[in-house]
Length: 511
Image (cartoon, rainbow, N blue to C red; front, side):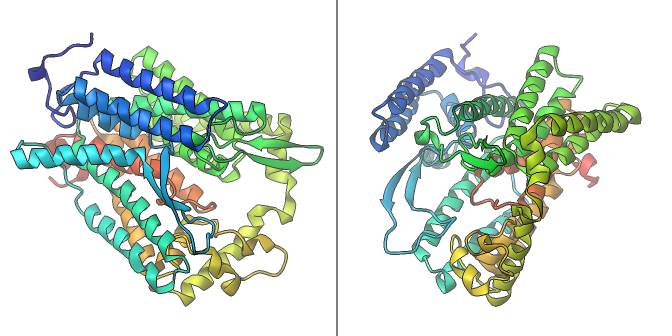
């Protein structure tokens, strides 16, 4: 069950097409270290020192695995763990930034993340292989590499206008972390088996994050998991009471909803795949329903709209691939979703309030002057922008509002594209659009891949990225603040890494 001869699999288990042996003792060691350090951090002595205990206990457990299992599948295990922890903010502050303003969206200190430890180990492994000239499969990013380089370089215009250059520099370091994770996964991972493990890891994340969100709603606030990234639980007042908007471990409920939008289509596509076993379809389907229920409880209106769009797109494309008639691919989902939507609006007062109750004075209408203010900033700072994290200090100077929406003076523009244009200038905005375009182009037609699992993962990732981009047009979302986005970016390439050259050429039309 747990064993495998060293010659039976590739050294890293990442790119040669053979399965990865996940040794039972390895799992037990990590699970034991995780449980012990979590209990310590969550005790009534919890705080900054126990956050450090948790962090270094986790690192110690991983190091122990490397000693016990010197065989190279440890690298595969560590890579999987890297993907699994993407929604979790496990970090320790190295030094606090002082002497500068602390505007919204800027880091408070330079932090060491668990992901930094993984990257250091994986980087050293890669260096050793290069020195010893061990052959490894290295996949290519293609034209995306140029856009990715431009995207990162344009962030370094912050010394020109930033009112807090140290914070802007730290933001660039944090962005570099996500880029390195993306590049590593894209260039190293290329097996269907490993992609399957990543998908199962995402399913486990859904159950954990949504379970935490439910507990937050039941308890009416945070549940003491700050050491894992729990930041806030948003409470909204309404006539006759109030209700909780849960954010799980992703901070703001809008960010939690955005992550669910990103991964929901993949879960639904795999559920609709008739070639999957019955047990797996039940597992994927129940995970999808669990995520949908929690998406409703985020009370994110943009999230609800994005979900409707991604649901119809995934349902149609997936079932048309398997030859289902239009009655099932269009009429059935429209009638069913309309009935469920009307039922929820009729029965749940909080949903009615979020949709109809705030009237013309609601936060949705405040986005218009926010957008006008962002356009003013871009017009006056077109080449270098305000600098990452320095947007809010410029709001008062370039604000465009008529006095009704004073929050325009305090909040960043609720549009991820305009926010990136404003903070990095027009060159940075062009690089942002170019990066997105190249990745969307890469994911196009992935649902035509012959292998059904790869096709459904490719389809779900493609639709999920579209849903992310749609929701980001109405909220403060950017690649700098959403590490889970980079995993989806990587999955686009990993799907195609698993396809042989002839099929790739056929689908892309290059033959």
